[in-house]
Image 1 (cartoon, rainbow, N blue to C red):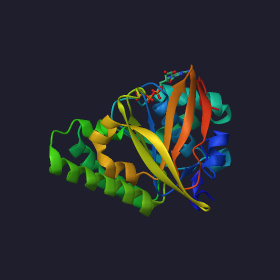
Image 2 (image 1 turned 90 degrees about the vertical axis):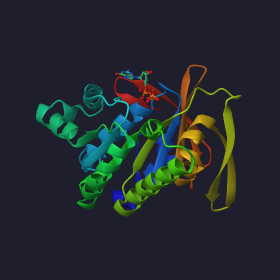
Image 3 (image 1 turned 120 degrees about the horizontal axis):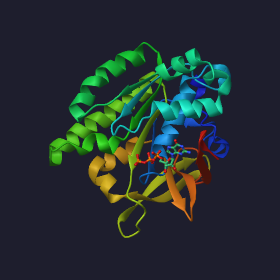
Length: 261
Ligand code: GTP
C-alpha cells in the first residue's frame, strides 16, 4: 500500500498537507539551522521505516548516510521505547529494528561515491525502503575541486541520487544546514509550486552558503523542501516547496519520544 506514494511522518497536519507524508521516488530536503531538529526527524523517519507495516512502518532496511556522526543508536532506541513500547520493550525486537538501519559514515565524497554502487545493489534487491543523507552539504564541503569541475562532480551525484529514488521508488530524505536566519545573509529564492488551479510562486529564503555549496541544480532536484525554523521559542516545520501543498507551517516539539506536533 505504501507503494502508492507517501510515507506518513506521524506529524498529522504535515502528512495531510503532503497528501499522506514523505513522497516515494523523489528527493525530500529538510533545511534548517543547527540544532533545529533535522537529525531528530531523520531518526524518527528511519525508525518508522524499519517497523512492521501494522505499526505504520515500511518493514524494511534503511540506509543512513551519517556524514557528521550525528546518528545515535541510543537516541533511536529511546524514541522507539517511548513511541512503540510493545516492540521496543522486547530486547530482541528492539535490536532487530535498530539492526535494520545501516549507518554509513563516508569520510569523503569519493568514499561516498564508492558506496553508491553498493547502495544501488541493496536498493535493487528491494530490501531498502528509505535512504537518508544527513547532510548533503557536509558531504561535499570537504571537496577542494574548484569551479566547473566541482559543479560537474556535484551534478553527477545529484542526478545519481535522484535516479536512485526514481528507480527504487523509495523516499529519499536529505538534510542541509543553513545558518540561522539572518535576513541580510540569506538570498531570496523563489520556487514554483504546481497546483491543479495553477502555479503558485513561493519565495523562500535559501541560504546563500547552501547555494554556493550545492549549486542551483540541487535546489531544483529536490521535489519537496521542508524548512525547520524557530520563532519566539517555538519550532516550526514549513512546506517551502511541494508539488501538492500550499506553503503551510506546523509547530512541532522535540521530546524524549522524538519529534511530535
Ligand atoms: P545540525 O545537525 O547541527 O544541523 O542540527 P539538527 O537540525 O540536525 O538538530 P538535531 O536534530 O540534532 O536537534 C537537536 C535538538 O534536538 C536539540 O536542540 C535538542 O532540543 C533535541 N534533542 C536532541 N537529542 C535529544 C534527546 O535525546 N532528548 C530530547 N528530549 N531532545 C533531544
